[in-house]
Length: 297
Length: 324
Image (tube, rainbow over all chains, first blue to last red):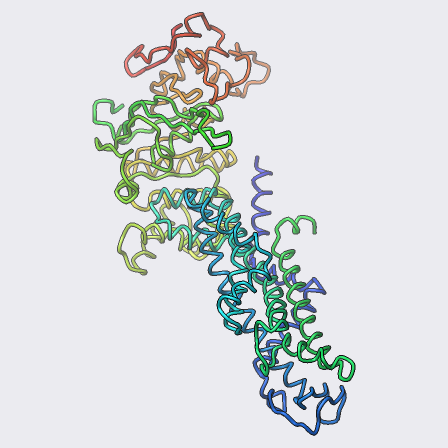
């Protein structure tokens, strides 16, 4: 009895002891995740400091220097068919991707959290909430996004709305699952016996205890959101030229694939690196936050 | 014994059924009868022990009384007022007066909340005290249960099982309730810590005139702790009496079997153990007649068909058995 109690205490300790520091430590052990983290941090720095890092403005045309290749004297990533500096446009593109991704994911999280918390906590409306979620799940994501954009019109703001709606069902299911398991815990029962209101229980006691899966979901979702923004812009449904959006840049570059392949390849690499980075960080976070992994280590 | 005074809490034919749903349209196809026709009184200042094996409905009974589970039938009254039908907001007033100490000290505290915040929350919910007043009260509470001021800023995982249970007790007594339901409050602790926590509970009872409903499967602890004992089997009451009566002169064959199963620290001494046959029947497939007849060594024909009456055999000693 004593042994099992101490063992239980130990695992609990391990799980909760400075949970943040431990998670960070475990994350930093994962080389792939660190690579991803570095890429994300660099990208954020580029996005914030964009005007300081470039010597042109993103839409500044120079018709005497069109289609310059990589490594040109004044344009180290070359220029496009209007003579715009590709490095400048890629750096400004990072801004757009991050802002669109972040706002789409945050909006989706808010919606998903509300639905998930309500569905998980109140059995009576669980059925309704989950059928709405199933309905959203029934559409392939990109099709749903295109449908919403078809209704609302093409613009980056509508892309944000479309992608956030697409993020809602996944988030709602994850949150609902966590709520279902947490609400059976004795400390929730204890709060009820103290007469705490549902809102207090939901936001002060249930929500803080289901952050781990939400963080992982949000990170992975960033990758999807950025990729989808580019995909929609490539199809002409998102950012419109001359916005320096990566997907739109690829779309512009595809006509010059033979003469100036870097026009499409450079933003393509930017997308690839970003998506890769968010995915590996999400994977790393999932492993770092999973208490079961701890026991294997 | 305070049997003459008005009861603090009284239940009358209290029932709690859990529906079993099945089939295509989730129709109710049966009931798990967790608590069946339980009627008893708890008097101010006493400790009522509730004993029985796992799954006999002791915990459900406690939770139903506190309104954590909605009762299916019967009534609960607290200080003469019926409370089982009250809405959540009206019940809040009574919840101040009835608190619970939980079984698992590792699960009954929110792992992401500092102890100080957890205890202060009680005052946030029920009082209008400001931050510094709340903190003062919490520091007093911590001292009251034998913890230190520096524990205020710690997280639950930094405490041992016994300390956590003290925090649970502090939370329960924070609002000066009159009734505390201790649901296996010491079962998860090891023996030496158990003794300390029991002493704390007794000291607090004396100081604040608390009334306990002490749910436990540990008959030794119950004997030490309780004035009266209620024995439950399969959701029903089988015997109720003072500790003295139950332990000296158990009448129901189930009580006898339970008591003879207490381990004695005398090696080699053979006891006439009352053995039960078979397993506890499922509460969803309730036996006819006396619920205990499937395992009772004394079972007769009438036990299989007629539900035994709840009768008083001597003063304050009740039993439900045909053969006594």
